[in-house]
Length: 400
Image 1: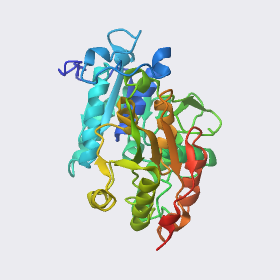
Image 2: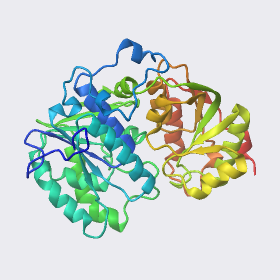
Image 3: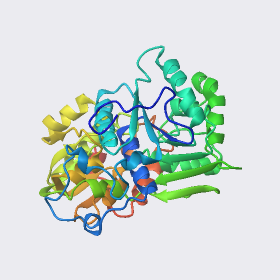
């Protein structure tokens, strides 16, 4: 679409030969595609914006004419032929954030193709069939989730020699580690051996996708990340400094309070819900927090208990937290459990004076059936957060 929301003509065959095709399934992935495109196009925030600027000079997200990348011409970030394909999930919160992010991408001149890829029994075949031609013609593929079976299947159809993996949160750390060690691509919080019937059937596709993501010959692989990663030989790592976010939003107005950031560790079966709620209550009491920024995957029941039992105001962001925090208002201190934001918020909020703190997950909070890799992975997320203040785990949450 164009900046005014009208359909942007792509021609009957979609993106042309040599174009860049990006696949995203979450708002954070789309944000990081925008960050990658901005860096790839040579965009850079002004010194005032990089240092935080002055309150009140932030651009309004409702003013599309102000979202063209500085110095990149009227076509903005879409000048290089970038098309973002949204493989829409079922979750309504995720879909809502994705639609808002898609609007921002279109305002940058990027073509966005929305696919209801999970909208029924025939949706996957229809989606894959419609993407086969663009995949064959694309010169560069950008993906946000190398663990996604959908994305792995699409990777088997491309001839592109340039592949870019942008951050999908802390999962990027696990992806790079598994790529370097030659392990199968398995999410860190998955329980079991990964050798169930569905995994066995999909194994050949996953193996092919993994080979596509391994550099060799003319095939180039780049990881665009704000995470501390050690790439295997041949993989290029480009730092994500959240320059697009800082150039487009903020600086925020700071409140005198503390904000807590929620996590989906309960929903993914890693942390016991009662332990988690005890920890949230103790953190709120200790740090004087009044607001709780909910993760898009947190259950309504859990959030109800946070609101009624602990007394925190629940905030359901309509954009990734990096953008919400940068727009403000935001607390002078942000407290989070181990998650992506302890790496990304210090970058997005650089120069604003906001303090980001991370609270360790005590081993006793973990469910008995949690993945054996969970504690080590979460400790690594906390320990490698370079610009976040580290808090010890909450004692009250370890009592019954």
